[in-house]
Length: 282
Image (cartoon, rainbow, N blue to C red; front, side, top):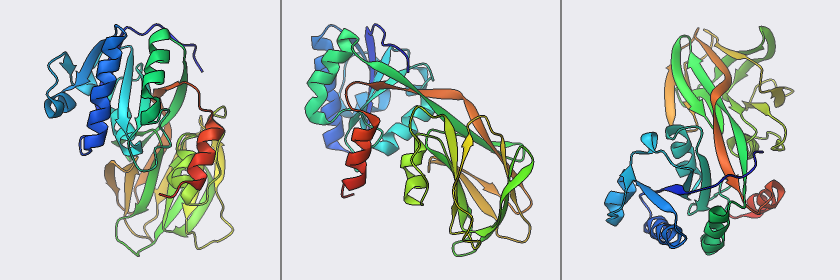
């Protein structure tokens, strides 16, 4: 984790299909201005709420911190777009919200701590993928390889530094970061990775070889997944949002991205959030 820093200018974005989220974002803007902080609002959000202050595209935003109001999907989308040196503070306005740090009722206290610099910044590894020479993109949570045709199975050979570590017929494969270990990978039977451990989790989806279990690899590993000709064509999906086709006989290369995502941490420990996640009815 990094030590906190002085915040003078704060960006603001939210999910746009939720009146609740946009209302929380407007309240956040008022609280930030009330503490003497400059506010730059995402163009799309500004258009929705009638904001007359400074605006910017997310991809071009130059701010000391960014407040995101929304669920995990909003966070995954935003983290892909914004510059990697901007710490993000997430206010939950979604279904699961495991990536969030603040509940709406805590907004005032959270912004007070942000203004005072009373927070830490956590660096989170991202993972990237390409199919042969075509770049798919990078992900905060996971790269998923699934069959292109429903019910058909893939035949995969997974290599770590050219050594086969998983092989055979299965519905697909998840390669998750430590952040993503509590998302799709967890639901598919993968282990939870402590945030102090920088690792990737490989989770085979419904393998016919039932002894093939999830593997934990160092995030420095270069992973190749061969889509064998004797199986179905595949899709490679980054965080459920960006996808590319991987036809039979292609090779998917997966490795750590040069880009990192930064998150502002205030008061909730990883294990506090984990306990909430495991008992929440979603």
